[in-house]
Length: 594
Image (cartoon, rainbow, N blue to C red; front, side):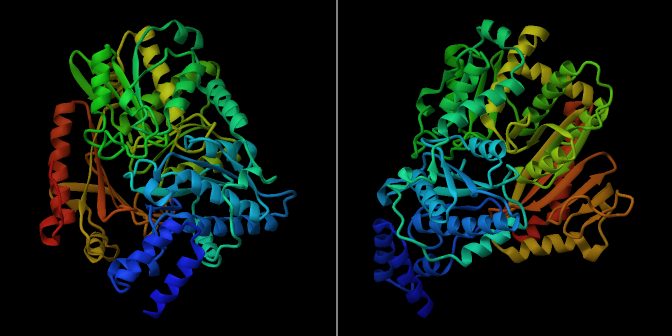
């Protein structure tokens, strides 16, 4: 109880927001020993791989003014330390932007969090480049990369439920933080929990160290993506094709609208009910375009206005979903399918721009290790370079940063969770640029090839093989069960080379740094709890625990010439893999067989 009492006193003294203090006081006075009160006062929101993310509310384990102040104090302390160690001149610079999320009843909002973050920067003698107005996430990695800033902060919970908010951190690479920076920032937060000053978020905009990069940033961003990615401005202008767009109640519409204008694309038809930023996300259960049912209004709008395609951003506009309506049937493109379509487009355009180039050993495309290996086959056949990385865009972004330093050109990266980075204006996923590029590609296919997007995808499958995947998860709230499943598969280093009647050709265990397919048996990717099996029939299976939920995720991919036969074999293999490797009955897992 001593710990709870002390924490309660600290919280009430430190949190500048009277409403969240009142919320915690009310709970504490009602029952100071309740599990909820103990959790709110003695556990902290973990600063992890993506920074902070969690529900808004009072307490050390929620997103609120105080926890954002603490996180920014830690970040600023670490940024200053790195800046001084590098013996750089001038002042460190941090870019800051925010989305539209808010919890009105407690006066909590992304905007207020961003203003507090700016207060902390200014107090630390760091320039805060605070974007004004709700901003699409990709603008911060753009700013950091373009101006060589020291770090970036985006206050957003992306496509999480409306109760949540988040604090996402970028490093000077222009990508999200990777080790050791995440650990070092976490340690610096622990050393700077007490607010350094009585911050005044309403006055920060007038401070000489708080700058407004908004106009310049937008101008530079749109000219960068247009110069790099728009190839047919004249032809786009002449098109009358209708495309539907939804912002999913997020911040994307004005950014994607501007991107369409810059590309000379015909103005899209907006899904009216979802076009304005609305923190209540009233028409969807989860504001994630991948979720079942999230695109009902987009489909209705397409059918009502006689369009063929819809494009959807997630609420912070760093991801892109797409679907096509043709002859009365819908094709919803998976993240892997949009990935291969954009990869093919980037490659075609690269070749057209470099007609005399014969050697492509310096041209790269990347995807995450759980994304489709169709990209690997595509790269091998066309003679450019392919790399996979750990899951998460930060790994691709940092790999792209390293490759750029070696003089290599990374022209496209993607992950199956509908994240795409087209070109090199931004080193992170960007749903705004990807939407304009996808639209231009669709118009080109219609104009030059006389095919729809799905017909073109089919021809890519015919040429490179039908890469079909079955990705899902099993769920268990018991960490020990998860650990036991992985331990059984690792079998103290005596790995399985069979599963049911299927032979396993090679195994990569990133936790052990082992890869049976390399000459020295060493894995190329950093250590991580990920197991990958390549079967003799070409099937690739990857298993990993979810970073954010009590799930074990599996990704199974098989390629073949005949989609029907390949699907049957994929599902047969999935059933054997799930039952034999994960033993859902014995382990009491909730599971689903295809």
